[in-house]
Image (cartoon, rainbow, N blue to C red):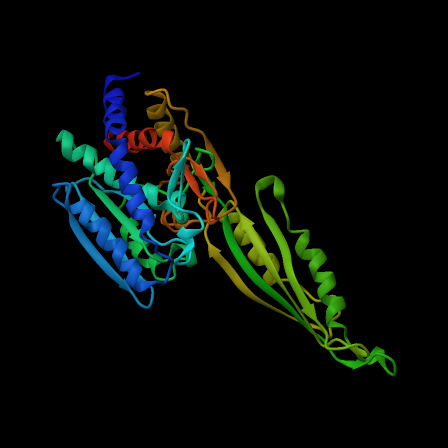
Length: 381
Ligand SMILES: [Zn+2]
């Protein structure tokens, strides 16, 4: 175990009771996406905590129409490209949910709405700053923290703020929940499409031959759509909803289906997009209409991502902490950053479970280790 690592872990073990109190305070401030008043309260809380650290910090608050406020904190000014620490202050839990999952510690489990996704992790960002402030040391780069208020509803206004924050970043650490402690070195991109068939209606009994059956045509297309799957390389294509026709006795004029697409590379996204947009009707009396497209680009497990993960893993090993990696199907705001060619390591949050449920919790025993890992990663050249 290296002496520096040991000293950093020791620091966070010592201040752990204070970190627990801070996590409890932040979790108790319920902040569902879109609650402007409560959203402002959590931004006030974070700003006040950061101001108390005695560092030279710059704060920017960006009002998000009808949603709340995004907070940007800039620290450790210097000429190097900044490291972007990305997180969000909104949760999926409605006001009052804390009565159903009270903020409490039972054994090693620290329960609370939004504690795992991701309020404990916001406290980790502040804890790293506190370490630098109290030891008079500095991270290797300037740091920009971006905390958005609308991540849980797809980042309609946060996306632009995040992309601006990422523009000149050396790399980006995303404080989303880990997967059983493992960081996320890949997230699939997502696409959503609608495929519709316009046929010709006719009486199903008297003159069905005059009709062109939209449901039959769409059924044929669905076979072709499902054949686009390539699970071996992480591409999934699934028709998820379907509707069509009007009533018995009528050859259906119209049918429509929605298609969920997930991919790990842009090349695959383009292959699927092209295939869907060039679907051809088997019955030439039927017209196909395709809409939709790629929503989020993939967070690809590039060489740079692997190198950043390995750096984090080696730092963790320096104090006897084992760090694993995984790739997941769900997207995060990290996907937007990765699309700008910035190296992203996601899922740095404290180990826990039950995101978005009333069993949401973190493990107390992981707080100091995770804080140390992040601090050492920020300090590393
Ligand atoms: Zn989250």
